[in-house]
Image (cartoon, rainbow, N blue to C red; front, side):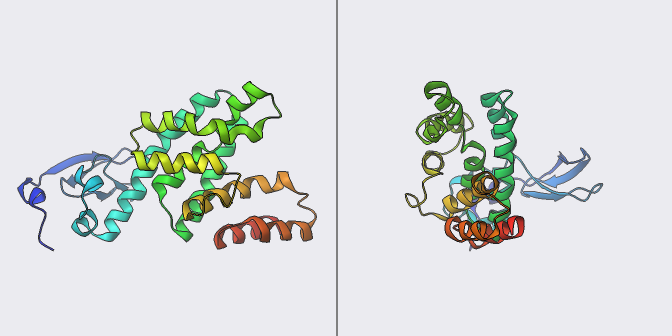
Length: 237
């Protein structure tokens, strides 16, 4: 493939960047997206990348499949802190809900690494999947948590719009939030990753984990990914 004309016209210059892990200053050329910290050896990525990577149909060919994949993952991780901040603003002092979302996120990332899936969809879905609990309980009482799927998408949409997510990303994330307790209505890998991550956290509250026969049956029945099922077996059997 010939070089991108836009890339050819851009003067490549060295730039000072700072490691997000330790703050050490290092150098990155303007056409690079990844650097290795000379002090702590952490690999990190440029937060502001050429805008064309997001919309150009040839972006994968231009920077390479591996670099493009790393960029997508890094982009979602950069947004993770902003999403978690919004989650804390939403739930306030409700640490139970905040910590639950964090645990689901940890499992979702683990499943993503093994199964694949879109980090830009699954990470926000994991963080925001339960945002409907608060208004559902406020509106219908403490026993109305099951109505969160109705209340959650609107709140998630406002947060995602605020953070600049694309329309198609918002629609898919909101669909997952709206059905994360309703398997079968969505059959995408992204949904399956989130669904299994949520079950990995919730299983101990849904069944007597001392009853290994029953637990094994639940694991075989509810988990949708090989990785999710494997982690569940390690945790509960």
